[in-house]
Each structure stands twice: as structure tokens, then as C-alpha cells.
Length: 559
Image 1 (cartoon, rainbow, N blue to C red):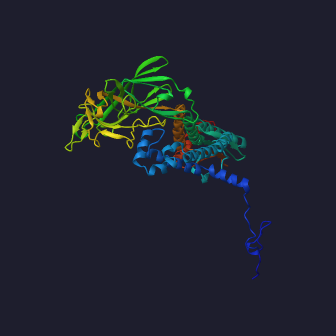
Image 2 (image 1 turned 45 degrees about the horizontal axis):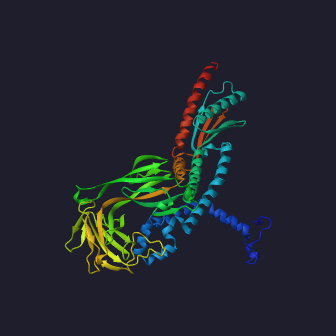
Image 3 (image 1 turned 120 degrees about the horizontal axis):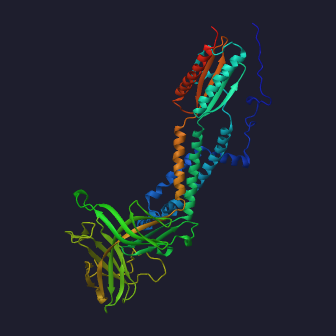
């Protein structure tokens, strides 16, 4: 048996591995520009964008676990006191400024660049696809989904080529009208033996996808701009007092990097009342708050109106949203020197310390007496003495109010020019002259009562108690844009999920006996469970139209 040798044909320049040294084949080096292109492709891939979006959500978690300087500065101070060892570490990591930290901003900017790099090329390709014609009809429709065949006899009257072409054209025109009425873009294709119509729709799906990603970019941009030109601030306002929207009137203020405080809208709010409702019927929830309503007089542009602020129902004024964060009690205290001259008179807010509104506050008397006085007080709205001799509050509303003060004497440290919290008193360098650590008991007063201060320093009067509200003022110039982009995100997502992308074809072929063979098929991009139904519906409606025409023509045929 004759053996035949075959020579393998290889491309020019082919080198067999066994004929070369191990190091003969080297991969081409990317170079600096090549590496930049590779990094850009990785950054602008959809996989990277999704990963950065997830990473941004994870990076935002610390902002909900610990208080932030921007929204709760008092909470940060309290957290520092409760965790003195851990606080410096987290503070260096910028955990208490999560949303303006270097690491959060880096993720934010990378996500922005990644989304822009994803969206812009897709917009270009999508516009090109919209201008392009539907694809040509496949040669073998039987390989497509939902394939169906209908044969109509008696279409051609005389069997001539011209009459067959006319019949095919009529069938294609009819199918084209049906497809256009259903929202398809169509193109008619003809050859010597057949004619077909190619139809396509569902580009709105890709449009929705692009709108979704573009709106995400819009949200990132709007949030960034809003953070730069917006501001947040907090203010405690006692019932009967006013707040003016200027920088000096805030207890704490966090401006954006680009904010010009001179452009803040001038308006004022006067608190005229606070209505608090507590549960008095349910024994298992006695004293639980049911509703908070703050009544204010809002003055803007010389016009004053009566307004209300409720929890989760902010007051919109001057381009800001004013939220009701909390409330509490503010004892009204007067201190007089030995001659009876008032050296201190103020309404001092006491932040709450328990569910039943037991509150703690600090009173500082810097002038008018021989030495400066500092007091740490506890206010009980409904005072009740325990078996241990200590007091507590048994109900959050004012039923049996009592003020208990511990008095300290010495230098309060107010003359050093260093800001000191009004809610804190450093007692390390002070001498306690009334309270648990002093020979004199603490001062316990009810509204209207006056007691003498230790060491003949004078007298102290508990004039009464008022309510205060804690307001959070928030200004974001882009909140309308954020809402718009959020709606576009939702609309684009729903469109990309529920609008099917499909193609349908109808081909008309004239048979030798003059009959017309009609083929129908479709193709979906992605999952489309209704594709077969769409092909069947096209075939049924098309045949229904052609059958009427074929009956008329058949009646014209000679007997």
C-alpha cells in the first residue's frame, strides 16, 4: 500500500517551539502608553463600575455607625468621651468625616470617571445603531426562533414572472405595514427569487440602559456640587426665642468648600410653642412620645407667617429645609450677689439623658461674684425619690419638676480665648462647694423657689422651665436635580428591564405552481419569552390580510 506524505502548510514566519530556545518567544512590551490604555480599559469596564458602586456603598457604612461632624457634632464629642482610646485612631482615619474623607472621595471620583468612560462610548454606538438599517434577512429562517411557514395558493393569476413579483411585493408591503404599526423599523429586501422584510425594535431598551447610567453620573455630579455649595447647621432655640439665618447664630455650622456665607438667605424663625403628646393609656408604653409639633413664626422678605415643623415634615424656607431633631427642657435661672443684684439670668437648655426626659445641663456664672461659679444640674420633669435616696423622673411631661444642682467654684477657663462647650464643665481645677463631694448638700429647687449659695456668695432662683427645640438646617442647591436624576434612574432601569429587543422577518417565495410560500421567524437579544407569540401573531394577522386579497383575485381567475 502506497504511503503518502502530507506537508502541513503554515503561515509565513511560523516558528516551531521545539526548534527554538526557551527564551526565543517574547511577548511584546506594552510601554507607557500601552499601560495607560490598559488601565483605562479596566477602569471604564462595566465590571469595574459595578465593583466601585458596591465599594462606595460599603464605604458609606461607617457614616451610619458613628456620629459625623457634619450632622451631629455633639454626638462626636460624646463618642470621644465614651471611647477615649479608639477615638484618635478613627479620627485619623477620618471616620467621623466619612463623606468628605480622602478614601471616600477617591472611590467617588473613580466611580464618576468609570461611569463616564462607560456611558460616552455606548452613547456613540447607540446613535450609530439607531441610524443604521435593520440587518439583512437570514438565508435560512428555519434556524431562527418561532419559525413558521404559510403557503397561499392562487396568488399569481397567470404564473408569469411579473405577476409572481407583484404578488411577492404585495405580501411584503402588507407585512411591512403591520410591522410599522407595531413600532418596528423595517427595510425591504428583494432578489430574483424572493422578497423579504426585515424588522427590528427594542432600541428603547438600550436607551433606558444608557439613561440609567447617565443619570447615575448626574446624581454623582449633583451630590458633589451640592456638597460644595451647600451647608448644614444646628441650633437650639428655646420657646419664645428667635433664630436668624446668619453664620453667628448657629451652634454648629458645616459649610461646603465653595460656599460664600454672604449669600445665605436672610430669614428668621421664632418658636412660639411646642406641642408634645405622650402615651398615658398604654401601661406597657407609658410616657412614650406620640407626636412632636413645633409652632414657629417664619419671617422672610418682610412677610411673617405661622408655620409648623414636625418630625419628618421639615419647614422649607429661604432655600433651606429646617428639621425638628429633638426637644427638651430649659430651666430659667437667676443668680444674685449678696446685695441682691442679678449677675446672671438665662434660660439654659438641658439635653435629655433618659426616656423620661431626665436632663442634664451646665450653668456658668463668669462675672459678678467673688469667684466664678460652675454648676452641673439635673432636671426631673416628674421627680420621684427612690428607696436609695436618689431621684429619677417617672414621666417625661412636667408634673412635679425639680432642679438638682452641684456647685463648683474657681476658674472656669473662659478667659483663655479657647472655645469651650456650653454643655461641658471641666471640674478638675474647680472646688466643689455644694454637692455629693462637699460638706454642703446639692441645691434642690422647685419652680419659683430661691436658695442661698454656699459661703455667702448670694442666692439662686429657679424661675421656671421652658421647652426648647433642636433644629437642623440643611441647604442643598441641587436637591431638585438629584430628584430628577433619581426619577431618570428608576425610569431607565424599568425600561431596560421590561422592553424586549427583538427582530422579526417575513420572506415571500414564489413556488413553481404559482403558490406563495411565506416564512416567518424572529430573534431576541437576551431573554424574550414572548418571541414565539410575536412571530405567531405576525403570521396570523398577515395571512388574514392576504387571504382577503387572494379571494378577490381568485374570483377573477377564468373558470
